[in-house]
Length: 111
Length: 116
Image (cartoon, rainbow over all chains, first blue to last red; front, side, top):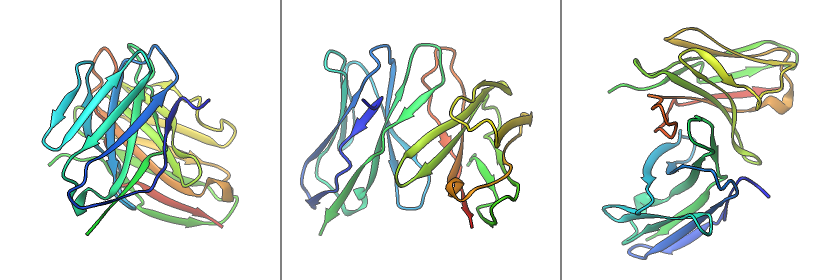
């Protein structure tokens, strides 16, 4: 089993739609979780951190489910500019700086 | 606007040649990471440093890859000899390295390596 797994997609959604991605992780000791966004032929950039209590940033909501070992990302009112690959990132344990990236979920928002 | 810089941005070389990639982390950041990205494998962690000390290089093929931080403003990744399977985008990232781990990483633009 991979340490971090994501559905590669693509998710093709119309503008204005709500879309959600999940990411599962295998190491129960994992402490920190992030969503990064990567545009085609560009570097990954932090979208948001994922806190135990969940967090929201505008149209984006991230949730953590420790019992089932997954994190989720919800995008409301999708924009064309949201088209990108979304990478799930997991830090494997307290006090380490080792991050495991998922292979990403590709989103296409269609006009 | 502080950012991670990487050179070269593109490199085409022939099998067997030495390749050196350079990274300048964001000033004040004390963790530096090297990743490799391919279509098949996604982003793989090759090595990382904290306060210039290598903490983990288990992701690197030891016989041909080496990573160093000669000073706080420069990280290098060398491949010698290079092979076609090394063709990938190599990203450097840096972070402020909070004591508990779990820290935002800022990525450079990457070096796109093609080994013929």
